[in-house]
Length: 145
Image (tube, rainbow, N blue to C red):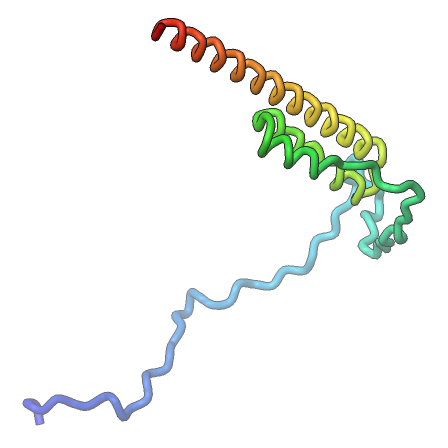
């Protein structure tokens, strides 16, 4: 019998025996706080009623956000200011969606101004490029003859 191994698979596991010094922590009653400076004597009430705001109606039509113009000038004219025009147009839409008409108008005007600056910069860069190419071609043709 001493040479045989005992098969423990069929036996249930032994029961856990907690030691005498350990166990569940003692349960203490809740403390009553009194006379804290800055707080009312009875404490704050936890029965707060939260009321959601009612539906918001827009009396004014949305200001134009110039998103189409901003995308066009970003692709075709001058992309550095065109990107900022797209950002301002998006902010204008967001401001109108949350009901902030003043900010929506301001962002709309900024998008329009940045789009106009992009158009002017694009036209100016095209004119400079045409003049540069014209002068270069003129110098090359003059040197050939």
